Structures are given as structure tokens and as C-alpha cells.
Image (cartoon, rainbow, N blue to C red; front, side):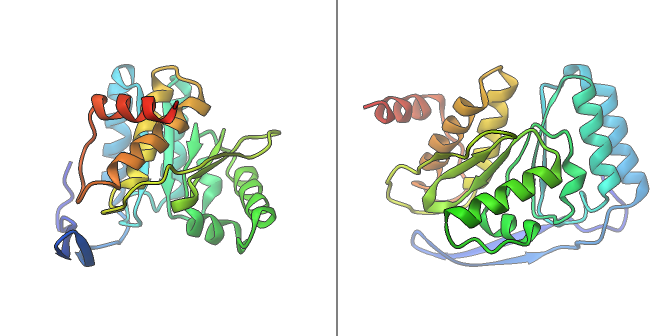
Length: 228
């Protein structure tokens, strides 16, 4: 799908050896037009019987600016039993009601909840506030070197520590977590195991340079080493 007059986002990364120095983005972040939103809705409706999962990944580029649009996508997916997950920088988290899970990072959690995170108590306050307001089934908080923390209604926080690894490039780590966990959920794997797989997959990605995929073999190897 294209939108007339809207530029394609272009990102340029500047690096020396294996270390990224900076990134320059050329883009427009204005909201997409109503016609584009309707085209996305129509696309999903027409193909929903062939879809196992949908990820709403919001980089504040204008696609998911409209809360009603986000609600519509989530409603269509859940009405048809399709897993729908959200990776969002938005503070309008009430639009995520019904999502299978939402995955903010630590900073996004602070900004959306209005709670400054300084310790476990404030993390729990922020996490529970976000989960209650969003109405999502679960909340996954990616916390960098601290791993992932998971919140579900009426359950205590569960933590998934990061495994110590040599970090070359964190690019794509968050995307890897939500992609792996969403795929696992769509395959019928329980959330706890889905998050563990996402955490393992992210550990593999950050040990490489650039935006890279992982293989089943690499994931199996990491899972075997994690059990030792």
C-alpha cells in the first residue's frame, strides 16, 4: 500500500568498526490519511482467516496515531481469535484494550504511566498502572541488561534475566523479543515460555552486528545452554 505524497522513511546509520555512532532519519511523522487507514482495515478483514498473528509496532511515524484505528485492528483480530501484540511509544495506552500483550521498554513505561522508575516498588507501580489502564491481557517490559519483566492481572511480576553476553549491537533487540514471543503465542505456547524464547532470541541478536535474523539452530543451541 502506498500513500500519494508521503515519503518513504529512510534511516542511515553511521558506524566505525562494530560500534554504531549515530543514526540520521529522513521521514514524515504526520498521521496517515483516512484512506490509508481504511485500506489497512480492509486488508486485514479480507485476509484474517489466513492470519495467525498481527504485531502493531509503533515508531511514531504516523501509522498508529489514531486510537480508534488501533482499537479497530485489535477488535478485528481478537474477534477472530488472532493473536495481536503491540510495541508502542504512545501514551494513549487505553487504545490497547484486548491486546494479547503490550511491550514497552523501561522509558516508554515511565512516560506512559507517569511513574519514575527507580526501584522494584516503582517498577511494579508503573507496570500495574500501565496494565490496568491499557486493558491488555499482559504487559512485557524490556529492561535492557535487566532482562524482561512480565505483568498479568492478579499475578505477581515475573522476571526473565538477560544472560550475560558480549554485546556488539542492540539494534533490533526489542523487535526480536516481540516477534519471537508473538510467534510462540500464535503456535499455542504459554506466555511464560513465549517470553523466555523472546529473551533468548534477543540475546543472540545483540551478539551480532547490524539488523540480523536468527536461525532455529541458534535458538536451539541457546536454549540448550540456558538449561545447563
